[in-house]
Length: 396
Image 1 (tube, rainbow, N blue to C red):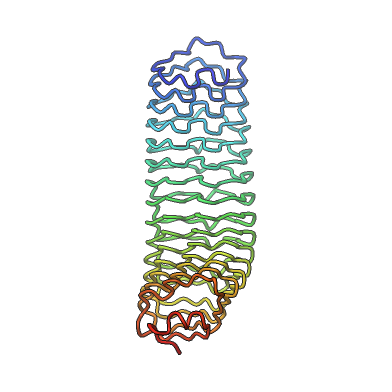
Image 2: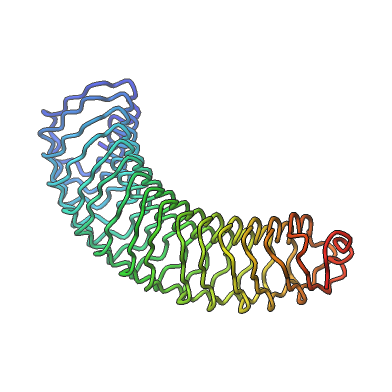
């Protein structure tokens, strides 16, 4: 009976209390896209034999309540997208749900944007391996209880809390993420989160951390002290837009395998201290806008950065307007094809050591020193840079 009422978009009311459903095994997309449905009676539904509830209520966008107290979900294995885009649901009680066999909760509550509180502490998630986007776009949630979640088998948590923009706090102290490989966008756009303690997160197997804390703009406290980043290859936009963070010590980060650091710290506008002293950037190819608009940073020591493989340094330090101490002594730019705007609006720099900079004829160097402090002394031997900028800037 999968897709039984799928796309019955004009259906307003449905009473299935007398439907014999004992033998049904598949309820996938059963009420999907019943976008006008306001009343649904499932009071005598027998779901004992059901194994698949994928997208069962997907896009029932007019439902404000849903009584599932009769549901027996003991044999269900798939709940992905089950309530996705039920964006008028005000409350949801799953207290009776037995989820011990469920393996997939991908997008289960995606875009339930009217839910204010959600208690999932009673869900058994021991066998779940996919939580991608599980609570993404639940933008009205202010209270979320995941206190008994068992995440030992989860491999994908990407977008899990994406745009839970009303959450002020989030307790994940019970999470075991030892098998998780993908955490891209997991907290992205959680713009009301003030504090986040991830000290219990052991990220040994994580490969992707792209956009992990993107635009967590209210975050003032972030504990990632036990992060193991040995296998991570993507940190692009990881802390971008964390505009309330004052301090960030990443001295424990192992970045040996990271290829992408694009916009990693951009728009961390209040960041005053940033420790990247042990960063290994041997494999990084993209550093574009990495520190752009970090306009509270005064000092940045990148003396251990190895940039041999970097291709893109576009706007790397753009609008770091208070930066007065910048160590680039080991920078190698032989393979870089764009350094456009790299130091633009660095209006507080008094000296700049580019003695190791060597660029090619086809390298884009437009606006390299745009609005750079006019009194900044630049140590540079590269003829291409000198020929273009020697008339308007001070070279040593």
